[in-house]
Image (cartoon, rainbow, N blue to C red; front, side, top):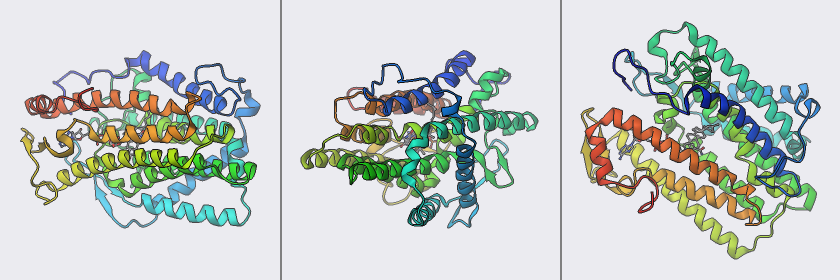
Length: 418
Ligand SMILES: NC(=O)C1=CN([C@@H]2O[C@H](COP(=O)(O)OP(=O)(O)OC[C@H]3O[C@@H](n4cnc5c(N)ncnc54)[C@H](OP(=O)(O)O)[C@@H]3O)[C@@H](O)[C@H]2O)C=CC1
Ligand SMILES: CC(C)CCC[C@@H](C)[C@H]1CC=C2C3=C(CC[C@@]21C)[C@@]1(C)CC[C@H](O)C[C@@H]1CC3
């Protein structure tokens, strides 16, 4: 995205103060959720049951376990890939190459974990380590972002992200200075976005399911649903890994604390909240209700997948017969905007599907507690904010054509409401 000569990108996330506050609030929220999920009252808005001391948070053994996990995922990333994809064109007109082997990493991880469990690895013990593991992940995110910040001090301006170059060290540390930090062909942002956190999330869910089976004889229906829905989501993300190359995280945001913490700590330890809650607060769930929840998840997934695939197909090849008949608006960049089909209903149909799924993940936890609905609430805020950021970027990119699109498709996420 280009800004007038001499000017900088506008500050996001409330500027340096907002960035500093988020660097405290996000880890604090994550630990709050981890502690509250295992407490009797499980009150989202109540105080945590206790404040963990260094003996609870810090364990060299757990840190080693965490680093081994990162090492394993890095090794799987380096294995030969079925395809190598090119990213979008960069400022210096070059394109980076990315291995497409995320789904392969998921399958190989499943095989390795399966082998280890059958050889006696007590996976059900993992839930007891969640707090020190989350601490190790948070520590890693801080150290890693610091190293990335230092690395970015010596790079050419063309390698900097549009945000993250404000000159304020706190803000730039949070947003990330370098757009695509790499060592040789190893791309840190792309690796972190899809591998250790997402695969770690389903592994934690599985460990919670196994511990429930140990405690109660068999996993509950609610636990099966949460595991199944979230595995589908992660499997889908890795199967369509190439699509992540056009997200704003890869094309616009630098790699700083926000994404390092988000990818490595926030995703595995807060996105598994429903399964954590269910282990400590079993919920009865009958077949009719379970079937209704499956239908809601299927509806969300259908909208999410069809909308994402329609845009990806169109962006790859606008003359593809699956999208060639759709109505479009031309833009000055030579690209077109879809104005019928899914993208003619609302400006972010994929967010709508994602939100419907988020609701389906919470419903198996019943309605007695607000805690399992945290993901749905947080995710609504994240997507509303993300949508606003994307609008700004599209307005910069497409100008009048984007305004015309907004006039033709007035609702952002939910038809006739928002
Ligand atoms: N679970 C989670 O925590 C998160 C999940 N997600 C999910 O990830 C997926 C990707 O989301 P995200 O990266 O935010 O953005 P999108 O996939 O919605 O992509 C937005 C981009 O699509 C293009 N676009 C917008 N409107 C049109 C149109 N009418 N016709 C053609 N192209 C259009 C524009 O880019 P261009 O024109 O340059 O192609 C725009 O910048 C979503 O499904 C989202 O729900 C996202 C964030 C977090
Ligand atoms: C910690 C902060 C609140 C912000 C953290 C944001 C990150 C957790 C998310 C930013 C974009 C993401 C995407 C995904 C996961 C969450 C993060 C990393 C997906 C990989 C989820 C699966 C989808 O199919 C694709 C998503 C791309 C963006």
